[in-house]
Amino acid sequence: MPTINRLAEMHDEITAWRRDFHEYPEVLYETHRTSAKVAEILTEIGVDEVTTGVGRTGVVGVIKGRNGGTGKSIALRADMDALPMTEETGKEYASKNEGAMHACGHDGHTAMLLGTAKYLTETRNFDGTVILIFQPAEEGGGGAKTMMDDGLFTRWHVDEIYGLHNQPGTPLNHFGTRPGALMASSDEFTITVKGKGGHAAYPHKTIDPIIVGSQIVSALQSIASRNVDPLQSIVVSVTFFQAGTAYNIIPETVKLGGTIRTLAKGTRKQAAERIKQVVEGICAANGADVELEFSEGYPTTVNHPEQTNFATRIATEISGSIDKVDKNLAPIMGAEDFSYYLEEKPGAFVFLGNGDSAGLHHPEYDFNDEVIPYGCSYFIKLVETAMPAT
Image (cartoon, rainbow, N blue to C red):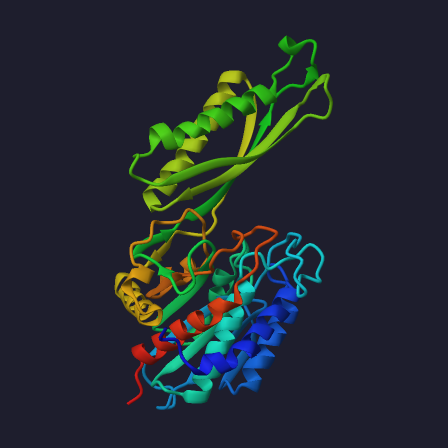
């Protein structure tokens, strides 16, 4: 197992950081304690520059190589935010913040990047500059874009950017990625159907928005099955339907909504257009009015081929076997705001096995601390190989 030996000595310390973050989870941009702790550790371990408040609560660290930081610059990113849910792990370091939980492993991502930073600061075995990005609000808040809007790529020069995410169900020391579309775009829609309410015993005197809404739910499923090329990936899911207050009242309105997931820009545009046609057509046929709102979310996460091939090579060195690296991983219909970075800079996103654990966003999920040496070694080897010391 060609992980870096020094990381075995650092493992307890990095694990302690991870469990501290886990115990005090913070959601979206409210990562005040987490950000302060990250900045404190970066300062203590000797990172050359530490800047807080980037994109509200993001932290950026800079480590200069042996040549004083001239030459190439590589960014490494970790997300810091937790999810608004209740933890059920029963661990001694379980969440102490009610209604918040690190159910996606961002505590582990943050701790691994801190461990990477400590090693790189100690050794400086590279030429160039490493930009450490500790980002808030990946879970639906678009923290990547907010940091970019706050000058992430203008205040700090970045040539390439890399990130990783743990993957439950995949064995330890196994990696997966692919060039091109890796994760889906994620958009949301909200539909408010306005009918005519009345007594449930006299439905002929009403325009029943529940009937109209039900027709919409069924018809939206035809977008994937009958409107989009079967070879193009798409998910259209209605995830809520709100209507009614009593058994004997036909309500005036119905509200429903959901998510659209696609891997191609053309499919993304086609889905939005078709939803509009379906919704307006059904409502018109039933004599109902409608309000349709779209909220554009994260774009597709598209890995750059050259950087993905490089990341695959590094992952193979760390895992010790090409059999442990899936370099043509099937695309995932989950979304990731690392996609914003990849629209601006060449780079690659990879998955790293979390072993046999509960799934992401599950109340019993916990990041596997045995992952730490592999994640840190991957980042370190990537930096030292891309910017070798001369």
